[in-house]
Length: 497
Image (cartoon, rainbow, N blue to C red):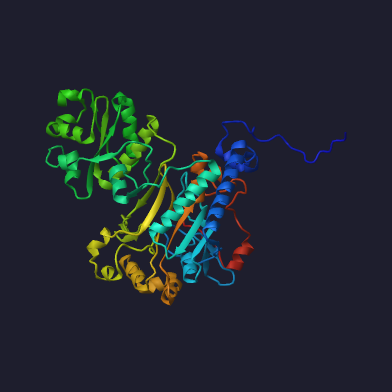
């Protein structure tokens, strides 16, 4: 028999079954890396997920409609990727951070159930679950409340998991308010597989002389919280020191602890360098957290934000390190988000989701509300969290022009600035806008979660690095000076310091 060589192959830069290949090498030779069994499996799963999404949404009356990639810069929380216009000198397009305003205008156009699987772009600092360009399942509906959207989207997630990986969830997903999530878990995306919770103890420590605890306990912006770890008394001092260094990443100045050796002996049965500072209160704390022999109780005392972030992260790390994760999947809806938060640098209010989210207030209440009360407003927003990862989020949108104007004024956006940035939306709101609500899922994160990967780069065919570069194509790169001249652009030398 004759054999014909169809294609010659040089020695490949690494073996496909080689375990320790640096990610830089994998990304530079991505076409080789994609031959690996696990990468083939990941991208096949991604296709199965998107196919299941389309099938479910089609069966529920949704229409797939594309929205522009070249659009206008609007304030959505991150820096835009800008594209200079050759035909409109000194003007720029922006690549969309999301199709938010276009999908709202589709609802105004009479398309009451829309979706698309689309690329979004954000020029922001990157981490394991971020890319400068990412894929989003974008959804919008008319005449549905948050309850209706959440039921539909929960059905979508049930369908995706069953079709793509054969997982069936039991019953409805639990719901939790934002306030409860922060109080018990320190974060608004709790991993409910870990059976550890934060417990407030500030009220027991306000009158002690130990200022490390008493100060935050008395501070309206402070928090003192305890985190009981069953069986944690076996932790060595070296391990505790490592956890102390870990919480320092989140701004914590230290990590106080109490080991419970023999609870029946009272204070004498506790081991800790801090017990001597509040012996009268310590047993009340042990009772409140439900401590038992062999446990350790960690404490955070500082501004509430620092305590929440530090103990919230410590809770997850302890759960993983000590093998405390229970079950495989733990979905939860987070609801009743605050409408606004204060920017630490500017002291101005910003929208936690986006400025088109509807608050839990009437237009009249917004217009008459005192500035001091703006921080207490809740929004009609909702996030879906699975295993501590936010896989999607949405809200009921503002459909009343007066309410939209009131929200923008609260955010310090003048009428002139609003007209300049999104006057087209404000104009569209005047012509009969139906109540509408929607949601968006991060496809990359969702597939990463379902595939059991640690980074979304493992479920994207050609991802960027954490410095937003493509090692395969060497993008971003320089362009021909003639192209810059066509665009009316030139680079200015940065003065040396």
